Image 1 (cartoon, rainbow, N blue to C red):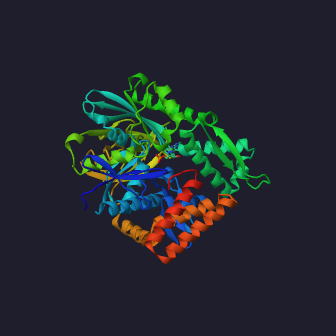
Image 2: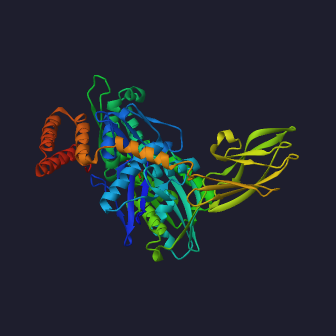
Image 3: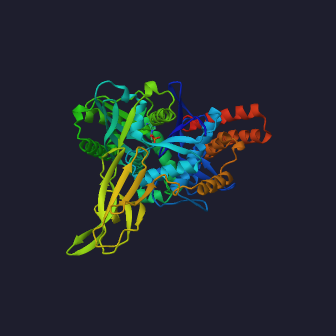
Length: 574
Ligand code: AMP
């Protein structure tokens, strides 16, 4: 087993990995030299190989049917994505991303990586955490800790080192998820007091608001626009660029494709104030989540000592203005909001391997974001009705925690009892999520009402141990839900790894070159005739250099084409 533990922020939009060495975070660069790897998986239809990252993102815009993105939103759900003729679920897709950052880390650090700390939104329930855990296992890593993203952010800012009691709010607006988390530092203990958020609200919604604003001004119906998939993808890309421009500038341009009409492409000038109006409903949703988190934590706005901004989309001026005015104080923005969580994960990873302790000696606790309990029956008008949820550990309880409840048999001579474990907040189990089950056998025959003592132990990694003891005989049954060998066995990992090796891109093919060609091709479909011919020339020159295999020429042609792509893409760094 390697001594290095990788800290991974598996994001909806991007994934970042880091290790903690000599007191600082060392971020892992991918083959393109970027710290952020887009969480996108795509299939190269010609070679039937899978791609991850920037190249996959390019395929997504050109051939959306061959790519999958934002699958973090579906973690824990029984959904599958079609990539060409293949079907992949969110766990497998995430495993591909994790496998790719693991390989990048091995290349960069020159060691084998087989352990990791992975972060998840605080709002993630048990099923989503289990799914994340499984993805990392499939990618060949043992998960040392599933860490809440806001906890990671607080650790990255070193908030746990403060001397006095403090209260913080972590405001995390990523690409596709929004998390607010109220934390308290008390006697050296960093504790999560309240969480709220939306698993479907993030930077992408702001981009979408700009797409819709552009279409409204250009007088094109959204439903009509959606039928032109390629034009729609181009507009979304441009809206994303505009959104980023509006972070630095007061206005920017948006070119709206023709969408099949006889009108030509329209170039719109969008002012920041205009965009902010379109964003207003999204900010309202954020305000609502902040209220819920504060209420859940029982903390007043005035008692917050710090507000920490996390997530790429928290750079937007409208978001910063909102935070400043709602909380009445400037937020902490010193660390790069895209990298904070990975930094925290790397610090936690260092703690796991007990390296660099001293200064980092912190205790972190979390709270459970969804209640966990058992299905129970109720006596209604003399009849037993099944399907009711009986929580054992309630939402917002600090973990690690152990709670015990007593359940009883309902029939005479009942010798078996099925304990179905659910997670959720609904009184009917049908509306909650089934986490797993445990069967208790050998209950002594006798009248109804035999007691079974059920103990739930929930640890910091989101691991739930369920233990049931027959009161009369003391016989105990137990199961661990989440990371039990049963959910991810070695055979499953081996099969996945074999499939992965067959599917994934031949690394010798230099993804960097291939990605640039994908990128150039995507731009080619967007730019005007005049720009196309020069782009054509550069692509051709690069392809010839690649075919000839002379490394100095490849490098200079690469740089030429990369520079051109950068300038055509409005200065977006390649
Ligand atoms: P994350 O999931 O934390 O990687 O967040 C990515 C989100 O941040 C995407 O929706 C990006 O569009 C957004 N983002 C990144 N940089 C900027 C920027 N300069 N201005 C506005 N949004 C940004």
